[in-house]
Image (cartoon, rainbow, N blue to C red; front, side, top):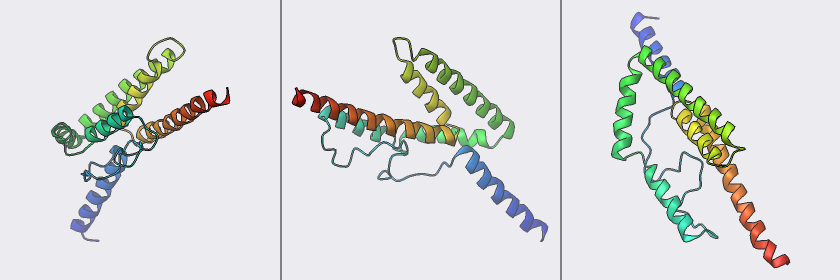
Length: 162
């Protein structure tokens, strides 16, 4: 294999492995499904209060990839990704910070206060850099959504049984 073809092949494979490690930064259309795993607020949400529909719509609007802050942050990430040592230091810092916050949140769960909120904040920080944390946070959000639907159905059936 000629040297130029080997270099091109190595560059392509290192880019794809880097994309697997750090996540892809592709631009999604505004109509793309939410990356958080939460149901889209554009669908007909039967049984949801107007406040809940408004909150879901605002979350979906904030997740749009064409927002100026998101474009600015993607530019910073591209600059960090160009320097291997800086990328390693950034990933290490994100891992340590997110891990400490998530563990602190788990320690706060039995106490009164925002324990689970702190755990989700730690997972969100980890999810900015690690795909496993994004998947875990999406799964937890789906389970939480199912729990609240079950809880509301249980509460609605309770007065009817009395």
